[in-house]
Length: 361
Image 1 (cartoon, rainbow, N blue to C red):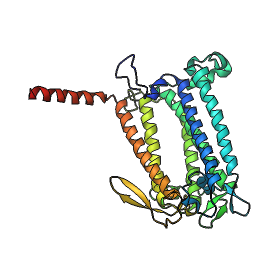
Image 2 (image 1 turned 90 degrees about the vertical axis):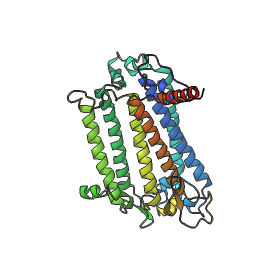
Image 3 (image 1 turned 30 degrees about the vertical axis):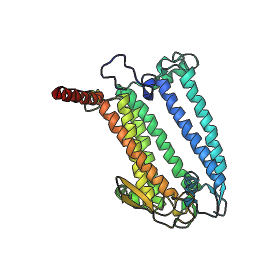
Image 4 (image 1 turned 90 degrees about the horizontal axis):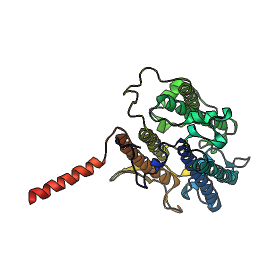
């Protein structure tokens, strides 16, 4: 967190990140706990939606958001390709179990392990050869070699997740709205096509192209991850490379920017694309409107819609507005990371008020 040169800063209770800034094990624990919360929410909501699902009403007209995604990747169908919800409960229960595992790990990092992985003792003592690897993940905010090492591992995990998705589509199959059935999809690794889709991705209507993009991204991320793990800072660590800016506050700002941008892109994609977001599961495409800010409205017949809006409308608008506020958080923390103290604004306003009072007197 930004200290503004104060060697012993204090923060309010609402500044949750301040308790993990220089405590790498606590920082990891907070991440794991967050993952556990997400896993629990996904599992619980999946089971809740499955319990209230009415087969006589289109899924997209029931406000569902979890089982729709499972249907899109081919989970919940019988051997004849008919939606039955088969396997959905298992997915939900697994998420609940995993959430408990994540929660236990978070408690260990918060209550048992050393606050700093480099100074770990006991169960994961840094002086024990088999556990010295833990010290390598100490977060040194102004050390580019440390940051690039950790970034590399994140990229590899993302790449592996992309490979899993591509192989799932190739071996198991996913839902194709063009034929209204599950089919196996081989990736189209055409680099020219992938490049062209950077500019018209909202209109992609080929699942092969979708999988090709994920396959390329997997290769790119794993290659980038290996590069970041194997390489060190090249040349002098200059202002251009982030010196005096590479900090916990800056990393937080970049994370918020990435999440915000992805949420906004997902909103536009969900609103119009019916290949990745089939009408059968999400409802009809939306129309973009402008008021105080952009918003999307339903275009189909809303008779019988349980929640008043289709699943597509819920997902699109929530993604857009969350993305918008994430971007604002990015700007806030990025400006703070560059050294600006927002308290100066309040001080300046107070000085203006004092000056006005003096002049009036």
